[in-house]
Every structure is written in structure tokens, then in C-alpha cells.
Length: 158
Image 1 (spheres, rainbow, N blue to C red):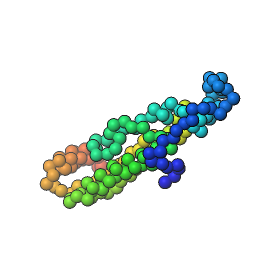
Image 2 (cartoon, rainbow, N blue to C red; image 1 turned 30 degrees about the vertical axis):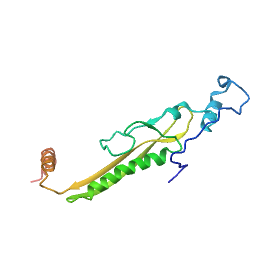
Image 3 (tube, rainbow, N blue to C red; image 1 turned 45 degrees about the horizontal axis):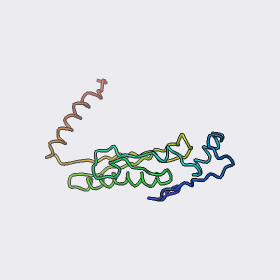
């Protein structure tokens, strides 16, 4: 794991500014961005950012939108994607099923307001091979695949 990881640890931002001006609007935009990045001024974008799972798996976290702090985003998103991998391992360990691969990728972004890097999402790609020919859904899928593949490779040499 890389970076500052702290599950459930949300930063509290001080309300007093350690700057010479009492009015934020009087400050240079770069100074404001710097103060937001260091946590001296609360970043509204980071504060209001929510995450939601877009998969059809009902037993994973973040089915309802939830907030994750930028500092915790890597650990929380990686943990969430691990839930998808665990589901694939469970499905792949059933009779007549074999988990061929499970790949997790995390996407990062930079907050336009404060410039803080954070993990903005993740994708889990799994491949499971089912060998049960009694499953009519699998037979139908193979028939559809066959109709798509037939004739794609033709040897013209005679």
C-alpha cells in the first residue's frame, strides 16, 4: 500500500486562518489553493465528493452514495474492489466453474479546487469459465458466440 492510509479517519479543518488577511477574497488564488491543499481552508469539492458502486452486485459496499476523504480514498476504494474479487473467487470455486483471472485497476484524479490527488474510482474485471453443459444459459451463450465467430477466419489458399 502506498500513501497515507487511514480508514474512517476524516480530517478536521481548523476554522482560524494563519494568514495576514481576515478576508479570503483578498488572497491570491494560488495562496487559497495552497491553504486548501494543506487543510487550513476546507475544500468544498473534497468535502462534498461522494462515491457509489455501479455494479449489479448487491452485497458490496457503497450501493448508496458515501463520502470518502482524499487521504483514505486509496485504501477504501481498493478494499471495495477486493469485495468484487472475493465474490468472483466464491463464484469460481463452485463446481463446474473456474476463476481464470481477476484484475483490479484504480483511477486517480486531481481535485480542480485544491489540487489534491485522490483515487476517484476502481474497476474489477473477472473472467470465470463455466464447464457445466447442463446450464441452458451457458449453452445459449455458446450458440450466440458461435454465430458471431463463424466465418471470421477464412483460409483462401487452395
